[in-house]
Image 1 (tube, protein in one colour):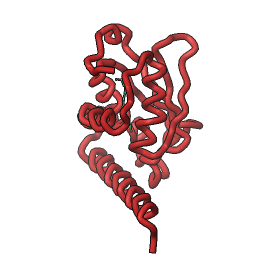
Image 2: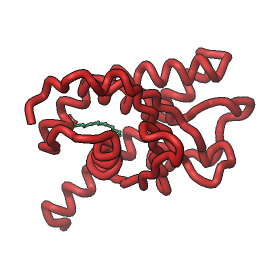
Image 3: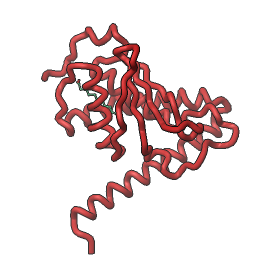
Length: 181
Ligand code: MYR
């Protein structure tokens, strides 16, 4: 008989697997519904955005993370706390050499593609995990940070790594965060 702690871990694993399988079914259905990859990508991003604007509350409450003082701190929180909390992985973070508002999350392991070998036939422009970009964009917007979030590399497209690029829009950072420290 498994101990309570192990049982909780098992349950998390099952929920995550169920989520990953359900996500695969969603992408497959969208590929049936939309002919163009760009439309599927847009749909996934929009859906992720709607999730992100709601998820952030849960995240802030459960993580007790405080207001970040820099873009780089925010990206570290996303990688080390949020990804760990929701996907069980910790991407590594790098930043652009040329601009101070551009960062990259490098995913060695991407649980969303655990059961996916390759992109569906004829779907070479599909950003299979684009939901994640929308989630990050939506969550950031709720803490008054506007950002462009896109996949810049994708193992499913033959790249060596999977990499999400986050470009913060400089203007909005000047706005005061509403959340108290
Ligand atoms: C702050 O400065 O107010 C804290 C900033 C926290 C940003 C939280 C963003 C959460 C992104 C969730 C992504 C989940 C991906 C699986």
